[in-house]
Amino acid sequence: MQLEAFLKASKYFSLGHLPTEGFHPSTEFLSTLAKDDLETAIRVIQDIDLQAIDVVKDALPLIRTLSTEIEDTLNSGSRVFLSGCGATGRLALALESVFRSIHAGTPLENRVQALMAGGDFALVKSVENFEDFPEYGKRHLLDLGFSEGDLLIAITEGGETPYVIGTVHGALSSSTRSVWFVYCNPKDLLCETIQRSREVIENPRVNSLCLPLGPMALSGSTRLQAATSQMLAVGMALTRNFFLADLFLDEYSKLEISPFLKPVIEWEAFAYLGGAVVLYQTSTYPIAVLTDTTERSPTFSLIPFEKSNESRMPHSLCYLSIPDAHTALESWRRILGRSPIGLDWPELPMRLDLDSILEFDFGREASERRRKRVLPKEQRILRFDGHHRTGELEFKSDVFDLRIQSSLIQDPLGEQIFVKMLLNTLSLLVMGRLDRYEGNVMTWVRASNGKLIDRTLRYLEKLIEKRGLSPKSREELARLVFELQPTLGPDEPLVLKALEKL
Image (cartoon, rainbow, N blue to C red; front, top):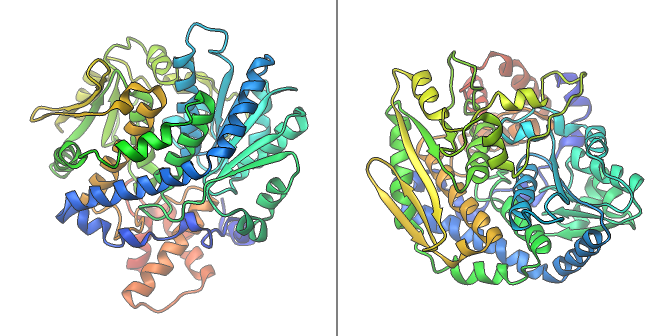
């Protein structure tokens, strides 16, 4: 996106008034707690996660109604589609994988289909600007075969994502079924302030499932509580497990998470600060680990995962290996529960086809290949798996073997959400120890699309005020951001560089 195009359309991306973009009062000093008081930091995030689950419980009547429509769709022989973008796209793919695992070997196995902005490729590497185009959403949905009788559940944390809204319009034009629109900001506020949201929400053929959460633990990082609540709500409807929110509220609140996570947070942060890299190995949770590690890149301006055939620097801080997957295709099948689907759209500025997806190989060979690539840096291995017989999760490294027990692990959906929450807490606090945010402000956010450019400008305004600098107009800040962005290296903070310039 060019500067003048952004300025002309800036109102389209202006989202600072939405509660999910705000600053949580309980995490004002999160970056300090991450370094000085990990136990308190973990407890604060745990409490915020529980508040998000409480919101899901309040929406149970709507979740039951959605579940009935899902059941009717499947009983009629049609399919259920889940669309999302970024974090919501990854949770949609995770829910498809859970559904497939529950119904493996039955006629229902292939009847839920997830799609995200950028296609399956975006599960491993963000695709810049794709989410800004509603026409991409409509086209993607129809390319996957959405037709009469099918049901769309469109998931957008803010309630305004153009790509997801495009899938809604595509579904309305292709099926007589109603569409479900799942979002985390107040319905009235969206209708009053964002036209594209109003056009969807006020459509009589669209059912709203609103989960009004308020701010995230890290400002704007909707991969955290927004994605968790939406994954739980839609997942409960898909699996008809209407008691899962109650189970989380009861059990997760009692779990002593700190003894399990604190040593891992300290170990991983110490590895990076000492110049090492980390390889996550898992046979049980490949999609959860891949989702969390991928989402660190745009949130904290980390170098994204490199392809298997790339031998040059730079490389990502961490990587994934599935020890019992023998090929790239097998590793992706373990991640998705199916073969990956590429986007063969010749007009796109980057390749998103199947061959480009399979250039990322997370199989057993990834460990040794990655070790050689990062030399002379040390590669440290973190093993993360579940043990269903004992109901335990395990983190294992060269210096610890940690386990936590919970009945949540015995439920396929509860297990994935439990793992997601733990990994989100882990990565958020590791990044805090690496100074990748200030207080609860994403100072290292990557401005890769219109929404993130707007977020960058708002963070600049907040930090300018905090530092007592002279105020700047929104246009002045936008010009500075567009001036600096092409000059930055792959691992440099745009917000902090802009503040230095000021």
